[in-house]
Image 1 (spheres, rainbow, N blue to C red):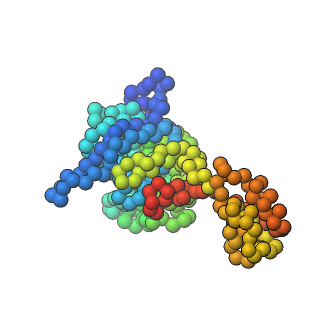
Image 2 (cartoon, rainbow, N blue to C red; image 1 turned 135 degrees about the horizontal axis):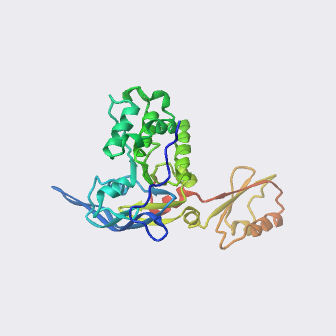
Image 3 (cartoon, rainbow, N blue to C red; image 1 turned 45 degrees about the vertical axis):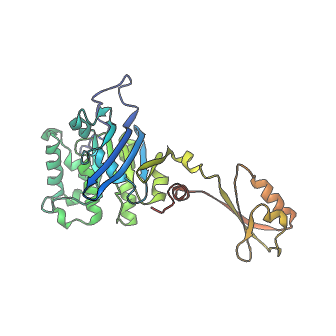
Length: 327
């Protein structure tokens, strides 16, 4: 069976290199909702660039503005001000071309219950004007592991299958950008891993991936670059290793034969504390204190070490520091 062409479509407004440096460029975007109760600002002066070919994670607490941003990209919400360029196409000047360059996988499982997966993809391809001879519905179903459900009604599919079908549905027009809004919410561990394997394959084929997720360890493992939104403002946007390095904190944990009581002042001055009867824990800043200094102080105290492990700050630590909440 022929596989779908998952490589990015040709840039409609090519630069000198033939392909854009950034898949998405957002500059000074504001969004204010007006209602009877007054106004509510969802996004404030949002500016960011998402590099072509990357996996970009967009994180933030509930109500931070993530869904508003994605709905603007999808053309479902009109921004109040600012500019958005998708694959070098201005969203205001050419919304149809911008829409052709992006596929959106929404949070909601919005599928017609009486369409089969094959019919769902064929209808979606028709809406994008893909000629029948250029459609690859069967190959897309194979890609997401739904070939055996090709002719089953969508209402008979499990939640995980429906999410995978939504990924295929977003790719019917071979867009160079795929946006996934909480794609693994409510999905079990096995299906989550399967979905991310498929997403990685798409990215390896050249598709730029933008995702929001509540699973911070997932973003840390998958994303090349991460943006964090809080109260409608971008509070961080950096390559993942650089973002993690913001927290200049490490913990060294020593399992020892025995601990003196009390601990020598040389150790307590370094921030050492006991944990149980046989563990010594030191949380320190690598920029100010070397691990050898800690080990020397332990040795001078006559403490015999049986085992040693270190822990570094993770994305959850950074997230909590920047937003003061847990996603």
